Figure 1: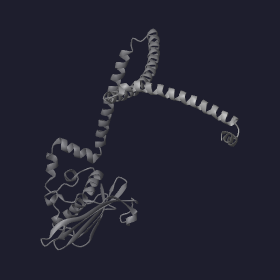
Figure 2: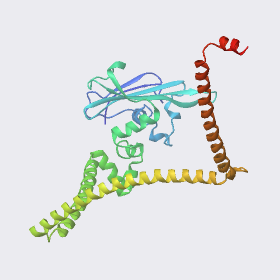
Figure 3: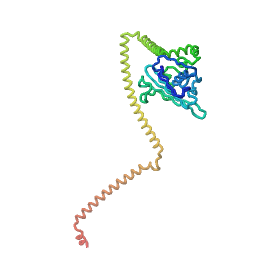
Length: 326
C-alpha cells in the first residue's frame, strides 16, 4: 500500500481543510516542532484505513478524531495497491448534549483511471459502503489487520519493541504478509493436498494391480465367458420378473373376485326361505295340469262352435225356418 493523497478537515488538530500530497515523493519525512501535527498525519492515514489510530488507546476509540471545536470531521486517503488506485473516506460527527463523537459513514472506491486523484462518481467503482464491509475490504487489500499494520508498518512512538518482543510465529505471519510470501504457504498447502490425493490414487492403483497380477489369457477368456453367462442370466431374470409382475397382478384381481364372492355367499347364507316355499313345486305341477286340461276343453269348445256356425250357415235364411216352425 502506497499513500498518494491525504485530505483532512475537522480532524484532530487540523480544524481547517488540509491536504498532504505524496504524489511525487518516493521517500518523505515529516519535520516540525512538537505539536505541529506530524503524528496526526499518520493517525489520519491509519484512521482512514481502519477507523481508529493506535495512539488513541482502545481499538475502537474515535473521540480524538474530531477537532475540539468542530461538529463534523472528514478524512480522505487516496492510495495505490499494486497497479490499482483506491480512495477511502470516513466522516465523524458530534451528537447529543454530551457531545459524543460517532463515526457517521465510510466508503471505499476504486478509480477506473489509476492515474487520477479526484474523480466524479461515474469514474469510480464502489468496493464497500458500510463500516464492516470497508474494514473487511481494507484488510483484504492491504493484507494486514489493524494490529499487524501497527506492528509492522506504522509503529507508534515507544512501541517498536512490541514487534521485536512478539512471538516468532506472530512476527513470521506479519513479515510473510508484508512480503507477499504467504502465497507460497498457500501453494505449499495446495501442493500437499494434491500430494495426498495422488498418494491415495496410487495406493488404489497398486491394490488393483495386485488383484489382477495373476491374470492370464485363459483366465481372461474364462472371465469373458462368465460375463456373457451373467448377462444372459440377467436378461432371463428380468424376463422372469416381468412375468412375475403380471402373475401378481392377476392373483391380486382373482383375490378381489374371491373376496367379492365370499361376501355374496355370506349374504345369501343369511337369507331365510318363506313358509310354504317347499309346496310351491307341487302346486305349480297341479296348476300346470289344470291349465292343460282347460286348454284342451277350450280347443273342443272352439271346434264345436265352428261346426255349429257352419251348420247354421248351411240352413240358409232364418226367417224361412221361423215361418215353417210357426
